[in-house]
Image (cartoon, rainbow, N blue to C red; front, side):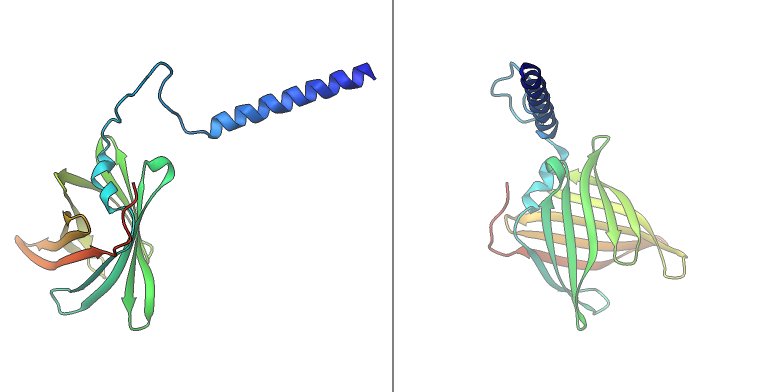
Length: 191
């Protein structure tokens, strides 16, 4: 009987130690021991953080005359190391998710990994100038030919508003195709 109790005690101790070890592994890292009141170091994602929370909507017109009615939702990704933006576009046939974009930091730069409804993936660095985020990337036409360079920028102009500019540069000419404003519903912001 004594031996059974010892084995049971050993098993309970082992299971408890294993459970504590697993719990520590699943807990996000905190300040190093001995650190008190350390200030949070700035992150490149701080420029995207104000977009998190609520739902953003746009009702605009492309330069070609086509209407754009869409909404975006920004949420935090794992460990607040990423911001995920889902963009939904409304059409006469209904709403669909057109883009899912993940913002993150890589090599000290703000990067996006953008996935489109047609299966395209774009990895694009963004320049950060104050509250303005901008990018440029080559694009192709539907038949695979050079479509020029797509330039985009977003800039938060008020707590619940940001301006979105899109242009295409080709053959030495730049044509603006969008100058729109996204407005956040009065749902508040996430910290």
